[in-house]
Image 1 (cartoon, rainbow, N blue to C red):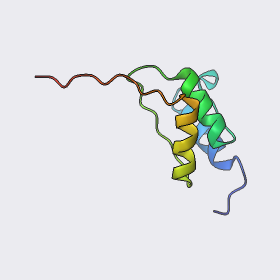
Image 2: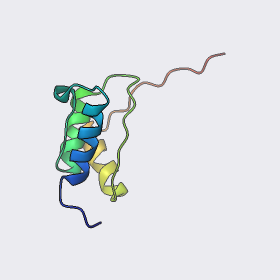
Image 3: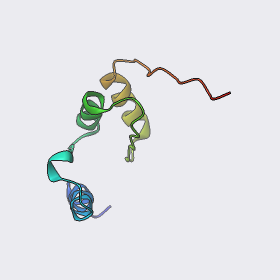
Image 4: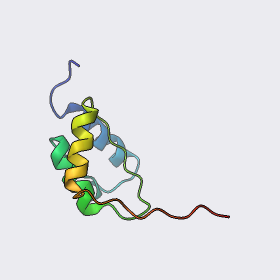
Length: 79
C-alpha cells in the first residue's frame, strides 16, 4: 500500500537488528513460496512461525507444498 517492494522487510529486519538479533539469523524472502521453503527448512518442533501476507489462501497453499503436506505430531494435552 504505497511502499516500495522490500521496504517493509527492511524495516522489520532493521528493527530486529536494533533489538539485538544477529543479522545472519534473519532471513528475508521475496515471495510467499520462498518464505515457505525457508520456514520448512529451518523450523524446529515447537517453533512459532508467524505468516504475514495479503493472500492467505495462496500463503496456506505455499506452506502446505513446502512442508510436503506433512503435519507435525501433536502433543497430548496435560492431564
